Length: 367
Image (cartoon, rainbow, N blue to C red; front, side):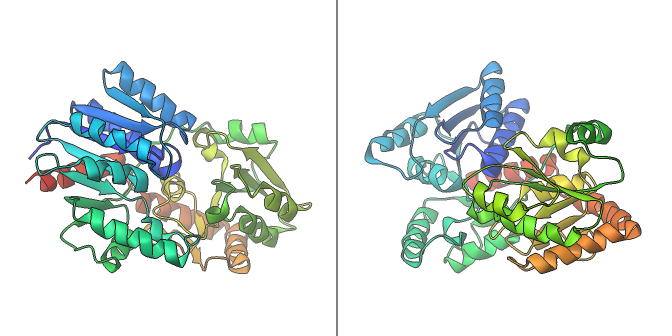
């Protein structure tokens, strides 16, 4: 069955969740689906603001919600608003923990809920044991009000099963991207003051605990003495740690700018996270034919095959990450082969596949 209407509910309007929700909304609108978007404003980024403007220009109703990440009593009014926006035969699709909370409490038999966790909150390493138990109980309760749960990786779906959620509700739909709009390699490198022969290693991510950006700097130190530069796109609470780790290393800090136009200037992508779901940065790097060196977190191994299109090393292992970078830096033949394989591997993560997979889940939820 095709939904009469889709109501998307998201509080986390930045990062990977914001990107996923925004891309899905634009595609649903482009394909002619009736659509209403409820979106949080407290964590919104420039990219999502732009998507809201595009949707409103197409006549899509977009409702701004000034809500906290942890719902309060006064925020609960939005449950009624969301239900009222969904005529019978609609899908109410909640994104991430808070969006999923509102969507699932608003759902009913005639307007079923679909939930995309973007990592169950219990998967995060900074969540304490007591909070993990509470969130787990809450998720098991809300899962009973959920027709289908879309996990963005097999890793995430397996975690759902450990929570006691039945496999009949869990579906895997990988994140997907449209072709990237990057500036030319020479243009980007001229802005950075980097020559064509320099190996440029890229890090893209928030300077916050799960991303462990200082680890990327320590890994890059293994390239000392080579013609190499680390370019970091991001900002956040760990800026001081990054500054301290840099020392006299050739590191360029670009701050929290839009990374997409600049990605064509990179040669290798480095991800040093302690926790992830299915990171967009790895999919982007593959689409551009850039070898990846990544920590073994989340669904990294579902994207990167160690030794074929990149290298996967244990979380926190600066030595292992650095040695992998050095292998790539010192062996042009290896670098070329990894890049060619990356393009092949990345073809699995298209936006069309993501949307078609999501629509298939909507049909199941309504049947």
